[in-house]
Length: 433
Image (cartoon, rainbow, N blue to C red; front, side, top):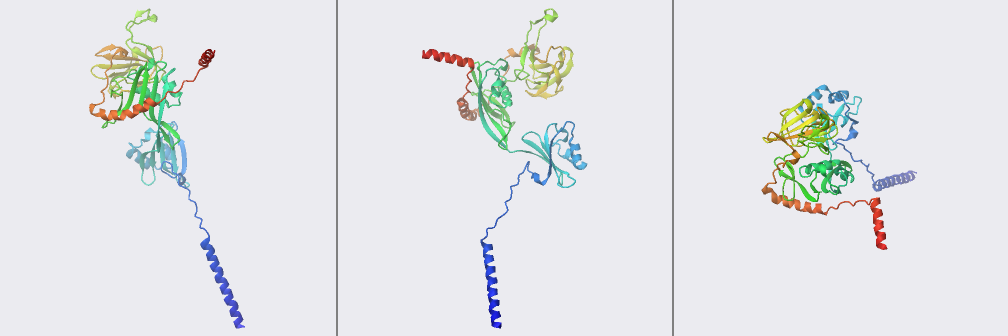
């Protein structure tokens, strides 16, 4: 009997052993499935899943201090930021309409940990309140795409550019490049232009504006004028536009103190006005009509000698440019500069208004040469310095392929108008007969 139970026990032992071996074999042959880890997505360098996020825009009347106190930031930290990081982030200069993010702690207090202020679509400022206060500036990743464009003017430069879906800033840039060589108040139908510039995109798809024009061509009254952006002073990072012969397209004075306005009254020493009984009342300025609030630009570098209000001139600014030239800008709504300030060519010095004796919004632009008022539109204004001789070999090598690229750009085909189509059909019918 003992022998019988021994045989049964041995059989059970073998069965258990085989069972264990079989189970082990299954474990070895079953594939191991690893959990799939989702990639961490960061914005502005932070994993937003680690925070409670508040996205908003600065409202009129908001202050940075109040926003932070509302989100439980200690007042000493706000003071430390305003004192130690003024050059990076001036807490007094947040602007209404600017977007921001507040990254808050994931607890019941929801205390602000990080404040992100978007200065513009590309640049942003980060204020980090975790541990010690810190602030720094950064940029979103930007993709630059080269674009070519060309157009033929039918009515205006801005319309010719906007018809192609081009950024309006390109219009301003083009007018600035040729401000000294082309009178944009007298463009002709059929004038042509070509430009090469770069467009900026955030995350490959979000349009973020246009870079300054790199190369341009403008044909005005049949006269072709090339313009190539080139750094003529690497120490000061000064970029000017030069033609194919290395002549600077800039002059020491802008042609007009207002962009895209119209001349409503010219310099006229023999002017007679009906309201004053046709008595001789010389007009020693050039009037540029534009809507109230339009920026008025300094036409050249200089020092503000007057910024005041007086009689029929209304609010005005006068600038001394050198020992020969001075300019004056009358009837402003408000001045932006004060006496003694130095201004650069193109700086905004005030805004179009109707102060003083004026029948409509405009700026009366007056121009002195050697102490005598003259007509700036008849003056042969001095040119800026041409490109230095030692820079010209590199300049010519740089512009040769750019010029070839410009020349290969084709103008858009003009759509056939209904009247033109009827004329074309009549001509075809005559030819067939």
